[in-house]
Length: 474
Image (cartoon, rainbow, N blue to C red; front, side, top):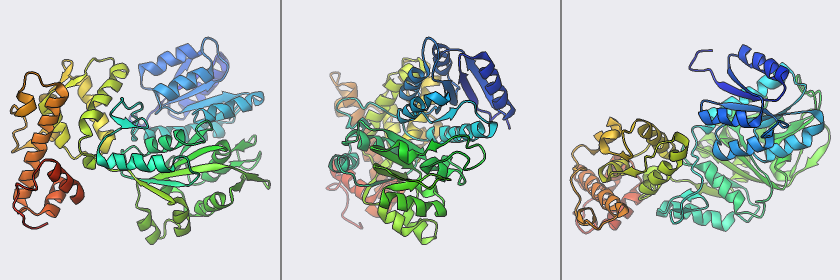
């Protein structure tokens, strides 16, 4: 395993011998290992950064495993937490999974069993790191803990409001980095099941050979390493919500079993003969075009219709007109604590540059770029020169740094007013340039700007450009 592939695993347990045994096993697998003898020491190591997965005992001095779990889930949601539990504490381990733990391993454990859980946790970490995690939208900047006041996001909020309290299955679609998991969380928290568990599964992180046992559980002896019976994610989500992310990655043979579980509300564990009834509200998500997957024979049409009862299309950032400034300020607030740097302002020309970019990686790309910018910023304000060249290059031919008229020129204007004026000015210039280059063809101009035709028409109306441009081709 190369140094770039190596991952760091934190082992927290008050038993020295167990820490040594676990550490030796993990190092032989090519991982770096940190050790902690209590919860407080473990939390301090997590806060230093660089930890990719936590393995913790439930019972520890100072800060026990459950308390450590709650802090990590709240403050470091990308990091999977694996619970170590004795046979008599299985109920506590199951409760921990319902609170957000990735999985649990019963002591004494076998090498293959631990390796399987750790490998899946690390794959989940990689996938979580690509998703959007912006909890706690500031008042007036969105709903359901999601930042956004654009018409596109208001449409999403309206669907959440109408269907959250129903038992209907929801299929969330959208590009990577748009925040589909945030929508799933909002659906759960606004539902009558909010006091029940929200169990999340990233189907892309689980090997095809293990996905059945992950979803439906297994009985003792069902396969090598099954040293005891274990409930699957469907059982853990009983009376709550099951979120299946990357649903398009489920192999064909499993799609039939998943369809049956959804239709009948019952399942059988791997290696078992007992049928278990479950009461689960399913929310699924994908960045794939499932209709195309059906045409290619990779996804079952009957499963698609069972999932697509209520569709929610999450818009890409390039179609969320006006949301960039609020997202930027929200991300800056988030990183104040995490990075320990007081960077809380963006100059108007830098904000205009951010607003003009198309963001192919969506909110995740914006978040990653701002994190890097904050780390290298020389002061408390992000300036245009602090932004990467590929962003500043997008403003070529547009005077993005000249003082704006109106609000920007007024000494009494607030920062928000200045930013709004600068953003509108840059948007106006970019749209006019695109229209001129395409002979005022709105469809072609929208393609050049990498936004939808409808978004361009709405923006032209908002900026009063419809009356100013020649009425040529649409």
